[in-house]
Image 1: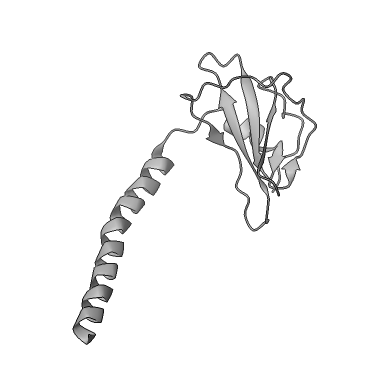
Image 2: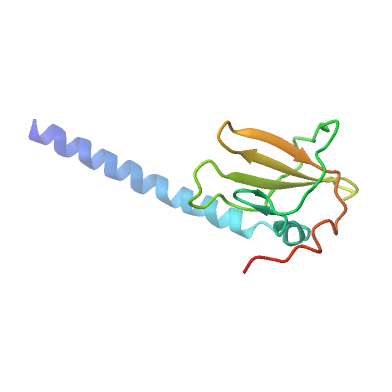
Length: 126
């Protein structure tokens, strides 16, 4: 029985060791991806507790192209039921939206269309 338990522990350790390099590689690849130049402009408009500036709700909510990458604007940090915000930019940069996801019920809201300077007057948090 002890031999079986030792083998089981070893297999669990090996499985973790094998998966770690691929996870580290994935993290490195994500960090290496080029950040869209509008991300910094829109980060001032969002926080884990919601928007820091009144932005128009998209009405009607557009069909966002699922092949276009959403750019993360913020993390929720230690805030339980916080919001993550993502920037959607069309290939021609004529359509810019902020997608808000999270909260108690995991709601999704879309704000926009926005001009590229929509958050220019918001003071950036320090």
